[in-house]
Structures are given as C-alpha cells and as structure tokens.
Length: 361
Image 1 (cartoon, rainbow, N blue to C red):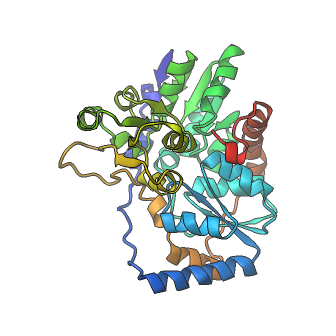
Image 2: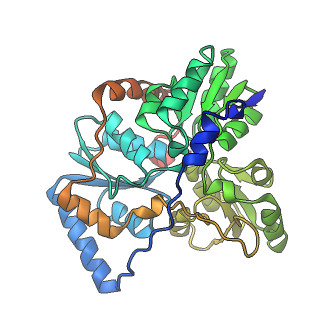
C-alpha cells in the first residue's frame, strides 16, 4: 500500500510551491591553454592543502576528470560518503550539491569540507523543509522514517534510516520483512518505485527531482520507436510511465555498469546528462541518446541537467581553494543525530556486500 502525503497540503505540497528553481548558470568558455593553466593551479592548491576532490557523476566532465587526475574520486552519493570517510586528506572538496557536502561533514567532523558554492542545493532538499517534515513525522509516530540522501542534515537527524538509490530497495525489503510501516521522503517517484518492488506499506512525502520529473513517457515511447535496438536506462526518480519502459532501472552506478556490460550499442538514458562523461569514458564505443524531457519543441528549466549541479565549475573550485569561504558547518547536536541513520546505512551495506567502492552497484 502506498499513500501520498498530499493528504496534508500544508506540508509537502506548499514546500514544493515555494521552491525557486534557478536558471542554468552560464560559465565563460575557456580555451585549451587557459583551461590547462587553471587545472594546474587547482592541482597545486589541492596538493598544498592536503585536499582531495570528490565529484558526483552529474557535475561537469572537467571536474570529474580533475578528481581522477588528482587522486580523488568520482562516484554516486553512497560511494562519495564512503570515500570521504576513508581518505587521509585533511580537506574534502565536494563537487556536487549541498547535501553531499553535509554528508561528508557528518561522517568526518574533524575534516574541513569545502564546496565550490554552498548555493548548489537540490530540489528534493529544498522541497522538504525540516520543520514541515518533522511535523509530518510527528503525525505518524508509528512509522519507521526512511529518508533519501537528498535531504538536509536536519531532516536526516529526524530519520531512522538514510538511503541512496543504490541501497533503497534492500533496506526497505529488510524493514518490510520485519513488519514495519514506512514513512518515506522526499522523492515520491523513487518511493513509489520502491513500494511497487517490495510491497511495503509506505507513506510518501510529495517531493520530486526537477530533472527526472521532466522525463515524459509519451516522448520516450516515440524515441524508442526511432531506435528499436536501444536499451532504455532509467533512474527511479523518474515517473512511472518512464520507469515502465526501462530495460534497466537503477542508481547512477548501476546505469553506468549497464552501458559497460550490455551487448546493445545504443542506449536511451533517462537521468542527468552529466553522467554521459563517465559512460563515454568507460564505454567509448557505445552511442548514448538523452531521453526526452517534455516532448518535441518543449522547453524547461532543467532539461536533463540539474541547475544546482551546474553551479560547480573549475572557476569557483579554484576560488574556494583560495578563500575557503564555502565551508560546510553543521551544529554538533544535529550532526550527532544525523550520523546515526547514515552509519546504519553504511553498516547495512557493508554487512550485505553492497557497494564497496569500485564494485559499487
């Protein structure tokens, strides 16, 4: 059974209505020599400060490449969390969105955590304010609270479990087997997918990713007809009518592995286009097609690339390494509460062999 949190529009729905989605940032184009010089300066700053760069698959390819060139890491949010905890670096520089930087700080309070900009938030995080979410939890005290990693430290502190898309299904299967009813936040599409796959009793917060919600089933069907031999890869933050057409539904890492391992030469990919850099790197012979967002001729704010992820660039990465003014700071009482459900997820993953860095699923 799945129940939507829209039963109480004063909470989730009003939070979504207040959310402001920024326009895609426009960064100056750098010539080859200028870009190389900028990357060299960043590499020197990272080395001088014993800092390591951790980048998500959705940020610009230049940042992903730089992370790998300097001993950093490119990964999904589960593996980013693991890497930050295992690194000997004194400073973690997180290229992604704010909840990723907060997770790094929650797990590594002794380390300095920087981001190119603290304005890089997330529609799921923005659409789940801590006060409203806490009231929602208080109204359903009988339910186990499971929150997606795309949430603030305060929301995590109110939860029993934190999950990423790569571990959501096994965690909910485990809880369902224990007879627990679940309160899920914030992504309603991922939550509904998990419910359909597990049969668990889930009460959903009414949140959605501005990128994945733009994928349209009718438009995807049209592209599939044009490319009948292409495999369809879909992130489960997408609507049902998109998920139902997928050959593979999975986390970013799972979708990348599908491109590497499947025999198909063409793939229609329904997730943020930032993932194409890693897919091209690991499977250069495969042809990737971006899934349509809103049909032919339509426009949107996100258009398959998160505007907050796009706030990360080489220019503001260099700036923060010089100024240190974009530092993640979390009140210690909140951090101590938030680390419990995150560590519970990491322990669960380790015990069941889920992830483990390069073998991540």
